[in-house]
Amino acid sequence: MARGDVTDEEWALIEPYLPLGERGPIPDLRRQFNAVVWRFRTGSPWRDVPERYGSWSTVYDRFRAWAVQGVMERLLEQMIALAAAGGQADLGLVSVDSTSARAHHHAAGMRLDPELLQEVEKAAEEEKGVRARHKSRLSARASPQTSSAEAPGAGVACG
Image (cartoon, rainbow, N blue to C red; front, side, top):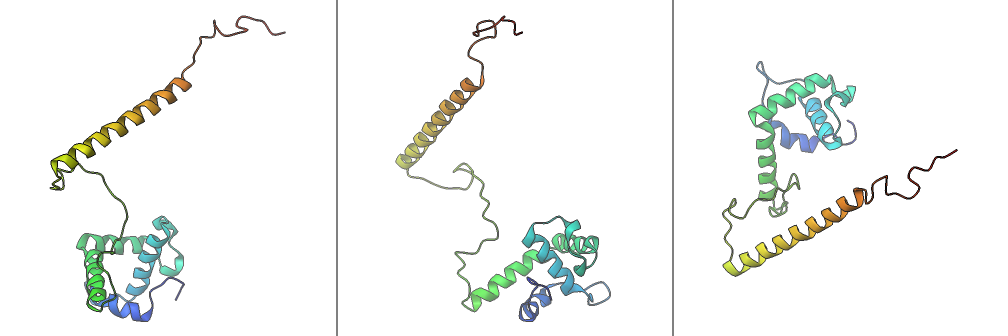
């Protein structure tokens, strides 16, 4: 077992939630699961999955099938539920990804006090103004102030 591979105790929790093959258990299912975990833990391309896990294309195909079937999502939900039932998880802290997307407050059904809404919109407009001023200063620096005919030494031959 390589560093970072799931332990026997972890595998006992995970295995029941992974599907069987068409003809029964998949002999190298744990190795393929470890390969998928390795790939996402390192952020490497699929082709860089170490040979100890088997063919990268087999690992990718297995992951793809699990993704289409919703296996990974159900597995994550079950692990969170087990941890919460055992008092081992604070569900307020559960997060797989910290990516956030800004949306207009109407998009999420958020309701704000009208006075607070005005303050927020005013602050947003002020921020837009600051960004616009900063952008115009940067573009003014990038554009030439004088033409080459007006520049000192223009037309002087170097010898």
